[in-house]
Length: 232
Image 1 (tube, rainbow, N blue to C red):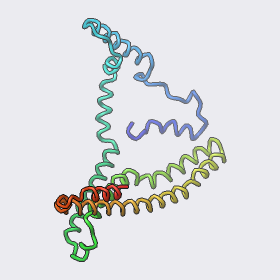
Image 2 (spheres, rainbow, N blue to C red):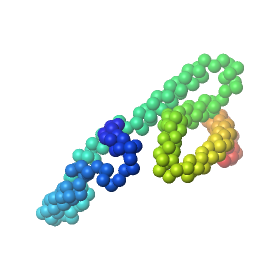
Image 3 (cartoon, rainbow, N blue to C red):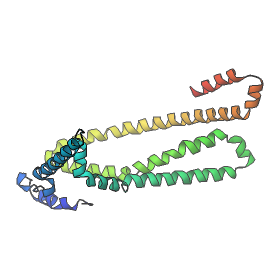
Image 4 (cartoon, rainbow, N blue to C red):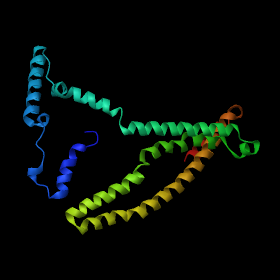
């Protein structure tokens, strides 16, 4: 079940001849409607009897959980070891490692470099830029899985419906240059956003450092306008 090896015989048979209804598997006993219906009906009858004895309304949800409860619990345990959890865990470790490296680098900066580097830039790196590592780990393997799946699916469709399948795939592949163009534009906009964010964080840091002077001269409203302008 883990590697879907049980489908290999039907795949092998399908490679030799065109599959028909007679080639389909017989349903498992646990999947037959008669068994499933009987189990749920018995659970529902027990639910009705128990709730009526207590003067309460029966619940189909409770009856269903009584039949499939262990399956639901088992599914929850399986979800703990899904590949998504591993991806998020790895992305978190990459993000923390990058943050640590940025922090160590900031401690080794020379006075000249410190003059060219604002606190806003460092904060933006630690809070926004390294967060992209989490997303990168989620989708990096699709760079090789996607083309491989496209080739296999195109071949299977070509066997079934002929050259029309190839034209359909070519039409979809024509969108790749458009996506590349949009990605490039998005990166440009992202860079502009990062620069604006650095400037806003730098302004807020300077305001916080000089808050006593601002309060002493009652400059709250002018600086509030500056902050509002920087946030637009």
